[in-house]
Length: 530
Image (cartoon, one colour):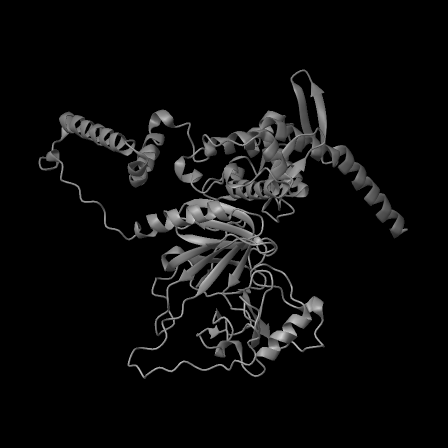
C-alpha cells in the first residue's frame, strides 16, 4: 500500500529512526498494476533501508508516497523494450479481511494514497504485432470513429496499433470481454499447434481459427477454496536509467531487513566482574576508567574485523565517536561538524549517471536539496550560528566537513546554489556588490537588517555610536566579509554614513539625511498651513 510521507524543508523524505538512505534516482514514474497513476509520473525515487519513496518534482508536498519494504512479498525486474522503459514490479503482501496489510503500517503516516479512477472496462484484447503481448481494448473504442492518434500504445513495447488491427481483434470476440477467455489453448485444425484463444490465425501455419468454437473446460466440483488472495502491485518506471543499481540496493535491503532492529531486544551481555563489588574514591575511579577503556578496545577490535561486523556494531561505534566528541579536549568540534549520524542521509555523486546531461542535472538538483536541508535543520542550526547568512566559502568548508571523505567540488556547490529558487527551497543565494556570494534564508530582507543595525547603534547617547565591521560581526554572528557588505548596504540605503579615521572606518547613523528630510517635511507642512 502506498502511504503519504513527511518531507524535510528541502522536500526530501524525513528519515525514520535508524533509517539510512541507499539510492536516489530521478525521472521515475509509478504504476498500479498495468496503469499509470496520474500525477506520479515525474519525480525522484528514494530507496532507504525501510522504504521505497516517491517524491514528485512539480508538487512534492502533495505527491509524496512510499512503500514499506516490510510489506513486500517479492519483486520482479523488467529490462524494457523499444519505447517501454525499465520497470521494477513490487508485489505487496495480501490484505486481511479488515483491509489492513499483514505488515504493520508506517509509524509516520498511515494515510493511504487516493487511488485513481478505475480503468474503463475491457471489451476485448488485441495482440501486438511487434512483441505479441495481449493488450486490453477499452470500452470507449468505437471502430471507424476513434482516431488513430488517441489509441493507447502497447503496454510492453509502446507501439500503437493500427485501427484495422483493432477491428479484426474485435471481430474475433464480438460479445465476449477479455476476462471471459478460457485458459485452454486452441488447437489448429491443420497442424494441431496450440494457439492463444484470441489469435485469429495459427502462429505456425497461418490457418484461420475463426471457425473454431470456444469450449469451456469441464471440471468437477471441488471443495478447494476460491481464488488466492489478491496481491497489490506497484511498479517503479525508470525513464532515465538507474533501474539496475536500484534493484541491487533493493534486494540488499530486503535481505538485511533493518526495520527489525528497532523492535529487536538488546544483545544480552555477561555482567562484568567488577559490577558485583562497588568501590569508591580514587580506586573506584581508576577501576571505572580501566573498565571503560577495555570496553572501548573490545568494541573497536570486533567492529573492524569485517564489513558485516562493522554494520552490526554501527550503533555502538557511532555512540562511542559521539562520546569522544563531547570530551573536554574536543570542545572545538561542534554540532555542525557532527559525525557519522549526520552523514547517513547524504547523497553521493556515484548514485547518479553524471556522464549524461540529465544525470548531471539530477545530481545538482539533489545536491541543492541536500545543502538546503543541511542549512535549515534546526538541530544543526548552521544559519542561526552564522547570523542568518553564510558565505559560499564557509558553506563549502562546513558541508564538506560533514560529508567526511565524500567531498564535493566548489563548482558543484556553486551550481547547486543557483537551483535554490527554481526548486522552491527555504534558502536562496545572493551576490553582493563586491561579488561576494552568500546563502541566506529565503525570508531575509534588507529592510529588517537595516532596522536591527539602527536599533543597535542608536542605543547610546544622543547621536548613537560609531561601529566597525568587526564589532558588527561579533554582534550579529556574521563573518567579517558579510558584516562589511551589510554595513555598506545600509550606507547605500541612506541609513548609515561612514567616518574614515586612523583606526579605520566607522559607521554612524545618518543624521544628515534624517534632518534634511525632517526640515523638508516641516517646510511642506508650513506651506500647506499658509
